[in-house]
Image (tube, rainbow, N blue to C red; front, side):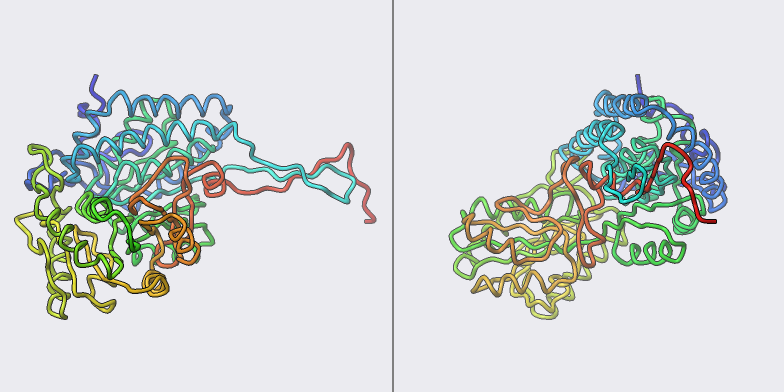
Length: 485
């Protein structure tokens, strides 16, 4: 039975049921071909406010459900992601330009996120506190209330479900605003899964839309927590707005992630890791390897091998061809990638491979002869570009890594003892020794520092409970206490 073939959701949003959005409709565009795949509803700010009011009402009832009942919904959701994986993957491929293995990864992790979240309702959520008072003293975790989840286009399913699943499991209700470019993969899919899993109507509301809807799901008075994944400039706006309204905002933002290739590292394996880190999903990943720091003794050979690999990676439509790279998400992002490369070449950089677009596709690109001031080195490109700089000493490599305002993911390739020493000196939310920078597991804390966000706010029981609950102090004594008044 199809999960997504129903016409109920076409051209609609979900506010207590599938309904027309006040913002009208928007086409679902396949970036590889420009073809229209269908339509989704577009919410307005008024729709978002109505959804927030309803979600707050439903949240009281949902939080009172037994842990067993909430866990069962999450387990069923995980099973539905597995049962309908092939259908969901087809939408991810066509709507986001992903290759099949990347789409398979999304459905696999989505199921695991639900299974991990299903354990949260029965997880320890409090402490017995020592007290000098004549009472028992406890700290207990309570649902935050209504949570707004704002998710991007690049991993539309994973970057939605990793907040939606734990927030629901812990007794919250959710307003989900997916990126308009991936409203099916990052929105409709989740809505349909949780409908089928038996989630109460209104506990998850789907609000595709633009910046006005984003502002509304942050500002709505019923919303207590915002979970935002996206660009650093947009994240600053979300964080500032949330602070003005005295709300918590968990911000997972951009990255310009470094891979350090130490002297003596296995060169062929390092090149393979570097290519995957930079070119996976066309480099449109916050964890993509944006800076290759290679020891001077092997730098020239590394560039040559990486360029050869880039030249041989097939690029095309992942829905109809077996390719390694699909399309860039839209024309605006395609133009930005080209502009950064041209600016860097004009400033003295050299293209060792790629460097050009072909329709909506951008060839995997290797840049060398760079300095830290080049845009290709300093900026988050969000395209299939591998900038390479050589270093002579470990101190120099550490300084180059830490000079970036971003701090999401760092990879260190080479002898483990030396890599461990480097790991203790670099500033990053995640460090991977002898693996590349793109890594995510449902039970692992995920987040960055500096311009990459506000730390690990997703993944694993500790981070998820901290993110989506409030700590409440509770005291209890056998009778009413005497007071001097």
